[in-house]
Image (cartoon, rainbow, N blue to C red; front, side, top):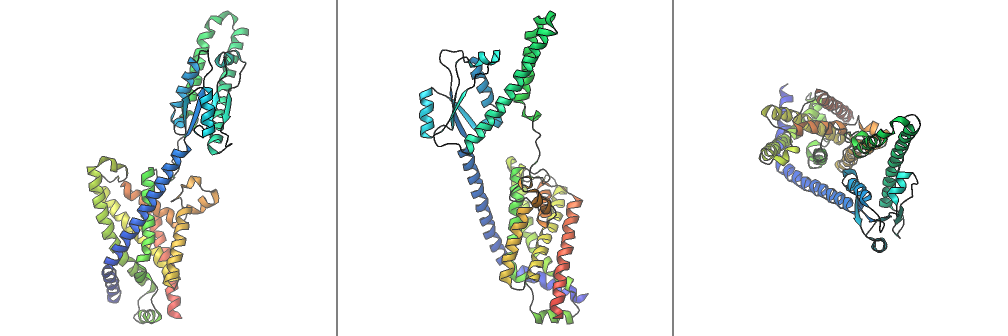
Length: 415
């Protein structure tokens, strides 16, 4: 027992002896992760701006365009449309010049008597002209929007015409109510057309315990940082040489005890760093309300809960790191494998791209990978929540990785 306690003391002392190197390495990795995150964010925002379509609308001359303008104003005010499309009212010559210059993605030419024809069932089509460059992603998106709108319109027309047929055949003595019935039916159709929640159910695509977008990427950054921090701790976690392994065996030090001691030493160093960062984050979030959307810790109990879960998280990640270093003898190869395996795990677990967008086989495998549970636990930490299941699964992975590393250590000792 005394020898085991001495081993723990020495490993913790060695870890804190390397605290300067660990802090510098962690700061460097933090800057790298932050720059990558900023680059991805800027690229995504730039892509969003480029994908926003500008569509020219040409109204017919010498015609009452009140209803057409009302329809386009109503459509353009919808969030689902305004995020990807903007309409500009121009004349036909300006629309064609804009298509030629690439200013407009498409031009919608409304024919004369368009609304009147719809009312009587002629359905005169509007002319949609695309850019000379041909069909691309944005023009295909606009085409799908038009098809969806036409489908809604045809359904509404069919309903109104059916209503008129009923009044003209079965309810001839009540035709005076037909106009009121048409207006009421049109109101119902408009309600369905404008209320997208009727057609679509909003679901958390991340499938990661209801995290917001910024919390989602904060969790990704934390897991990525911990994974990469194994590089700075290579000297503390790498496999011991045969002489040291033989000496530990002779002194009766169990292989599992060695793994727990090494992992605990590194964990305590990162707990000190993580606790400092968490305290600063909570204080800043209390002073700047906008940051409360990232850090959800609001009382001492939540802070203590997050603190304890942070210990489980850090220990879990470094148990995985220690297992890799123990299985791979060469530290250089171990770092490469740690990086590759870690990145693949995070991708399959939905840390880089939300799980809902991944192929089903990858998503199914990703749900049971350690990175998926690291991610869930990180989400609980920054939200101030607690899930016994998530904590227990992470502890189970601790036992598995330390157990595998212990078997590798025993093999080395016997050889």
